Image (cartoon, rainbow over all chains, first blue to last red; front, side, top):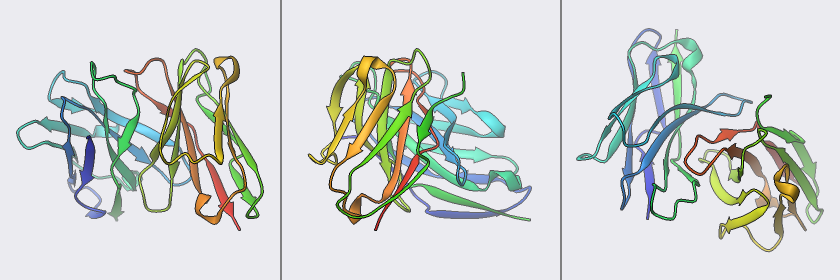
Length: 117
Length: 113
């Protein structure tokens, strides 16, 4: 069965410092992996996705994530945090191609990112 | 293209009442998904449609829940005889195919008193 674990429920950084949000996945197949962001009172927005192409994936707003199969990880990073980055972040896995893919997404528990001035 | 829309945005009801939510996907998106998100948790899959066909239902979807997508356009999610445990955010998402990005609506927040 596929699952995803976000290792930190809450991360606090100062504005201008690097951001690291950690995610580990479990999958019998090569997964599709995503990071979504949820701002208060707004819908979920896709930050980036990995679908078996380049292992380093660049997303919107300066975020990127690296797929590491040996570590079963897909950590999200940003070199310099901005106040507007404060939000809830979800690491997500999807059934891959060729496995009866339904496309349904399996979400982690979420990481709350706090950015201090 | 105005994205995925959901109505109502908020719903307060008394236990035992029926409620219905609507989701309008991005036009031409064949796939439509429903998820439920409770406080402090990530969204959980409920069900999905390929055009008008409902192809999978989660075990979370008890027999009090029913979803439809007539003509493969908008979808409705009905909860009968609501319970306090049904209080949650109900999210709708659509995608062009199963392999494409899912775009989420703003959600309908349900509070059952």
